[in-house]
Image 1 (cartoon, rainbow, N blue to C red):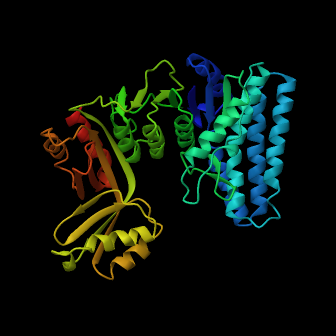
Image 2: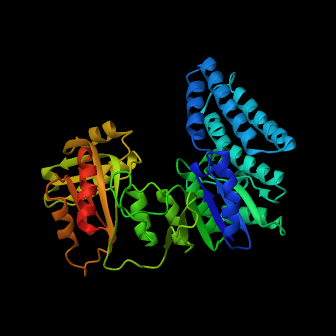
Image 3: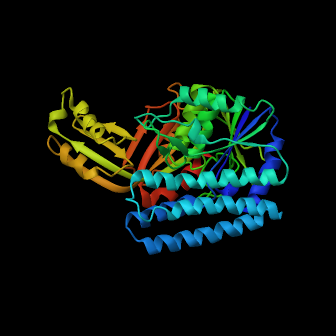
Length: 439
């Protein structure tokens, strides 16, 4: 079995949906499990609808629903070619939009919002299933709500997923093509929930790992990981092979092609992940696996924006133990992860990208230290083989950015990256300078 995930742009128009079947058929496997995101733009529309309901602006909510309904009616009339196909698809769309209207008289809760957001993937998968049906191509539409489960800590229950997804598939021993939703799941209370933004990648990885697939394929609108950000840097190239660790570093530190969490289930169960381009299906893309293939090389550069740096200084830290524990406990209480950290005798500098509780964190830290914060920072991550026996890479990197103010440097915490923190206004210049020097 191969698991194939197609993102929002890959199902973003009737023309794109019509291209999916040839791609699926080109992937040799005894069975295919296709995971779809919502049609491009739909999740944003549903978030907007939820906000309107929450603010009790019912007239605006209804107008928003009407606009989205007309968009999908047009979508259906362009995708389906027969009267029967159009009729069946429109009947399904009507059912979904009737649901949207029903929230008018309800107390709008987070549960209601999650129900609304789930409809994006339900729409895309059902329309694709009906599209295949119109073409007289057999497929099975599976509801992800029957087997995708997160626990009370919002972590996926891989054993539950393995058991129940497997049970759904074995119900249809003669079928070779299965379709399901990305992103959506149930929580520990049995309510409709989701895996957060980028969750369709995560769904595909979890299912591929749970079912021990031959390969997980992530189809998007770029031909794999590039060695730099093509939006800002010219003459980038795709990377043929990456290790799981290298891919995890790149995706976490800014490469948008793959959701960061998606690497971990595949790595744990050693299922290779291949990144491919729906606009150019013949391109080789990037293969991510457990093999180390880029020894003694610098592989790629990525950047992560929206970073806040926090400097914590206290004379109590000098020759003391327990100070770092006190610092980390503050961040733990507010469930705020730390990206980078550097220390000296009397100070700690660290970075975060979640600032919901920044004022509370600073207030608690100021009880035992002096605190400074810098917003609008960017982490530049250089990924490659940085094992201690390899020499000279730190010098090459530092020379490339010697004209740029560096707020922090992290080197040695990982064998796969060097991270630099720079003011965001210098991000593009740093990416280009590093690219010119390294590649």
